[in-house]
Length: 448
Ligand code: ATP
Image 1 (cartoon, rainbow, N blue to C red):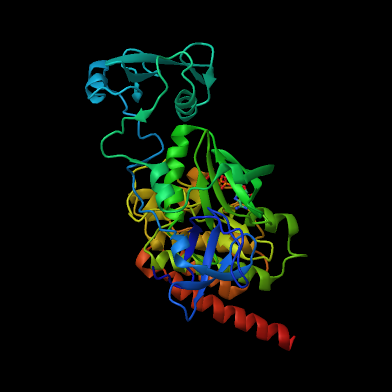
Image 2: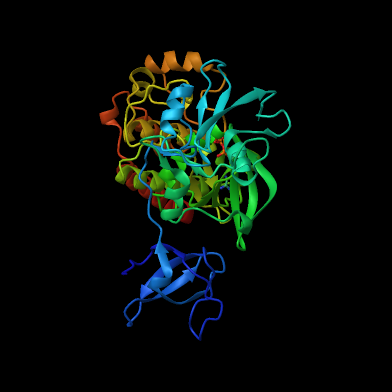
């Protein structure tokens, strides 16, 4: 196997007793390839959590692959939606003890049914939804279906047999299998979770430790939401850039755990508003603007549209590097019909009115983000409601220059807010503009 420099790999086995110059690692450890050696198949590599460098044989490694963004990837491949009892019976043929599926109840909307094959028959268990919990026997209660299936896979409990084999819905792929095959499935036993550092709309974010490395862990409890987050995760497996928050892996189980690099200084809005202009100078603001622009230029090169670029979704590392995160809405496609979730104040007019999303609509959002940076984390269009903003922006209104913001930076915002998407610059061009601005700013500082 030949490995390119920079490839991220997962160790297939333990290597507990390394010889001189070799790397020590355990099965599942994350390892980055640094360079080839003179010897075929032997590489110099760095252990991602210990930071140690040493030699490793390529046969001991599995390359981490990007996962194709695939809507058929499912956390619940055994969930068949709304089908009748007789249909479930048909699907569970030929009979096999423990073969099961879950469906939505037709007779009792809102409830589920667990259909399971045992001794040549199919048994149907109504899953009752009560007080936000699921139960079959009013004795054992579960937060979600994933939780319930996991329990009955291990314990027979009230039902006739343990659940041994899921009947996969046609056209779906098991997310667990796919993540494991591509090297992104982490081991929950190696993760410890400590204090909560943030709260998203669908789950909380915690500080964690994965095999000695400090990480951030987003825990999503609800199974339907977890399914949606799986898409964010598959997008993240494709991305590797210094200005994008890096995915380390995923843990599936009772809840979905998304493990990413830790960004010690939190999100950019809080970072700027809590410190203010007496602590954060214009050079630092320009650097943040450039960091985000470089991350976005990388997405642009992959033809990926972020669709939710805003300072709240930019995180700051311990050494003040800004990185773009929250890829929940990122898509290759440029059309969407789901308008409800759009962050109006950040969204370009053509995206709001015609649902046309493109890199150029991300550029509009980047202009808003620049405004947020130079106003130290203020809410855009202060004092205006979301409905007003939609109307007046369409009519040509644009925000004023934030206090003390260099004129050139404000003119960059201006070109990002061109009504006509074609007239907005690419991120590639924006980066060059910003670099020029940073140089000019440095010269001014020196001559002052
Ligand atoms: P969503 O809408 O996708 O649930 P969100 O944008 O509301 O998400 P999260 O991504 O869940 O927010 O993050 C919530 C907060 O947790 C962030 O604002 C940030 O303060 C913190 N946080 C998130 N990820 C990290 C990380 N990798 N390192 C440090 N802090 C983080």
